[in-house]
Image (tube, rainbow, N blue to C red; front, top):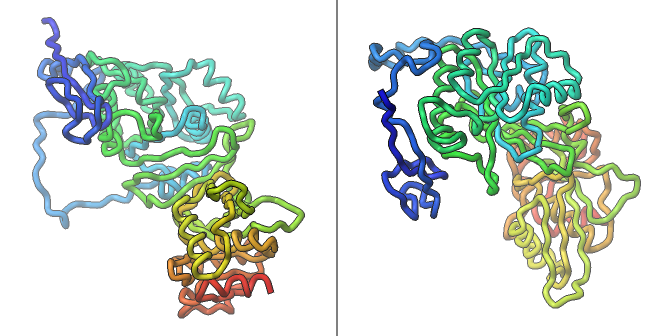
Length: 462
């Protein structure tokens, strides 16, 4: 019997299906996002279309409601890898039966990270499925990583039914897909990478993960806007979404949690791309603070929190007289609007005449800082550059600055002070409102409390 096929239009942004083309998506509002795809009528599908009946839901089973107090909870033991950064981001290790989606720019190191994880689990059988590279290319990368990988299996296949056939034979402990946009299901006539194919292949992998309790890692492409390619529903379907960030021209990478059903979404992992793969950065402050012998003006150290991890970031400012009519304002790694706000506060509340000066600001290490605790360090670096007087390299800052020129308290102040003391700093400037109930003598560092921004210059440059 011939297959019944039908045509439909899908929104490339959110996956909304329509019987006809529309200029504007009624669901997400995107313009010109509908494309035509040929799909098979689902009513013609049979269980025999699957390569393994283990991955087909049993239609005889009918779900019944259960009282929440009667639901038994079984403690799942996470699979801890030798990669402490990945363990931290996932919430303590790989959760059995979880589906993890990793996105990032081309060449950022997604495949290298996944192959490195696959080769670092010698006691687990890992199946690495690649739809983009040949087995020879993966072997060359594996030799560069310098791992033996005796229990890692390589499969170059894009058809999900063929993949599940090999999965049923090998029964791996971990399945890695590189990448989800290259897979296609025989149940659909649409091309690989289309909205319907991405949704169907992901649904099949999720069904496999949940029924066999096998963790699945999927690598996903991103669009030119930096979002994961494919329908937005893809991120809703999976358990965890990780974003691999960084500049390809710099050696450092940040693995950030966007969604996590089994842990916190406020954790990050930091890596350095070296010749033999990705190296874990256990002390992130080493990449954010410049190594210098001379004391220069315009540099201040701020203690920020990324996730639950305290970091020390270096704020650099250059304030020069403006040669042109309009002063330039340039910011790298910090919100330019917030920089303009802090400049206005310094002008209005502290009396520093920088309205007619060019201001260039930079956060070293390629990190984008959103923690407001960096405000005081930003102001200190601007004052230092404006007055051409250096800030001691033994001083750091952790406070927010308000529009009234007040120095405001920030959260986790005890953790910030402890991190600064651990790294050898002798003094830290904080808000006087942040130390209430805190025993300052317990820290091996001098804690200076200030309440107004105009006190900062007098304390730093006396």
